Image (cartoon, rainbow, N blue to C red; front, side):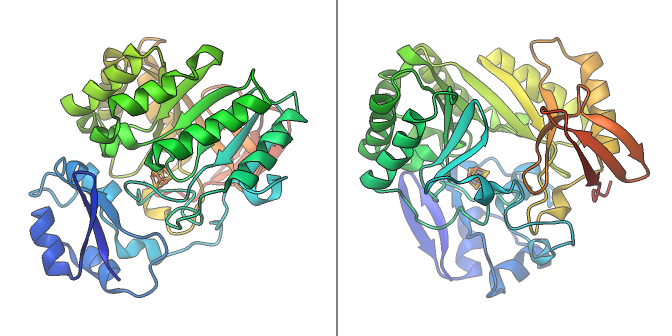
Length: 360
Ligand code: SF4
C-alpha cells in the first residue's frame, strides 16, 4: 500500500514507514506502525503536509496527530458499531442522494477527501474515488424538483472542495436549474486541513450561488486548527458574502475537555464562524477509541453552557444508530437513563434505545 502525503497541491506517495516518518518528522508508535503494516486497512491514509505541520512531534498524544495518523485501534469493531451508522443506505431514493429528513437532503458529491480523518463516520464511503456523472447528478436534481418539501441540500461526500472547480460548478448549476430556490450547504474540512486549496477563484465560483442561500459548514475540532493561514481563508469566504458554521465532533483524546472546547468555540466566533453543533461520535466501525460516555459528554457540555455566551454555544447532539435521526442532548432529547442505557427522543418525538459504549 502507498501512503499519500499532499505537498502543496500535489499528491505524493511514500512507499515505506521510514520515508513517512522522515516526511512527517515523527516517530510512529507501535500501534500506528501496526496500522501501516497491516493489509486490512479500510479507510486509506492521506495527510496534507500543512496539517501534519500542526502536529507537535514531541507529544505522542497530540490532538492533531490523533485525528490524522491511523492506529491499529481502528481494527477493533464492537457489537453496536455499524458500517453505515446513520442508516443512510435506507434513505437513498436515487444514487448519491440521501433523503432522511423532510426539509433537507444530502448529495454525496465525491468519495475523496484531502485528509482521511481517523474518526470519519462515513468511512465506508470515503476513500473511494466515486464521483457522480452528469446523468446521475441530473436524476438527483429531478428528485429535488419533485420534492418541494426539500428546502436545503447538503453537498458532502467525501469533501466537495476536493472536486475540480468545473465539476463542483456543474453540480451546483444542475441543482439550481432544477430547483432555483434550493439553499446549499457545502460541508468541508478543506479550510481546516488544507486551507491553500480555498483559492480566490473557488470562492468566486461559490459566491455565484450565494444569492439564493449558500453556507459553508466546516469541522474544526481543536483550537490549534484555527491557525492564521486557516483564518485567512475563512475571511476570504466571509468577504465573498458566504456565512460559515462549524460542526465539532467531540473526540476522546482530542477535545474531551471543557477548557479546550471553550477556547475552540470562542476562537471560532472571533474568526467569524458560528459554532453550530457539537456531535457525540457516531457508532462507526473501528472508532470506539474516540468515544467518551454520554455522561461525560453531558458534564462537559454543562460546563460549556456556564462558560460560553449563547452565540458561542453549539447544540450538543447525537445521531441514533441505524437511521433514527438526530437527538438534541442539550435540549429535551433524553427521555430516560438507566445505567448505560438511554431512551432518546428524536425530532419526530419517537423514542429509541441507545446503549452508551463510550469509555472515559
Ligand atoms: S473530511 Fe469529512 S468525509 Fe472526509 S474523512 Fe474527514 S470527516 Fe470523513
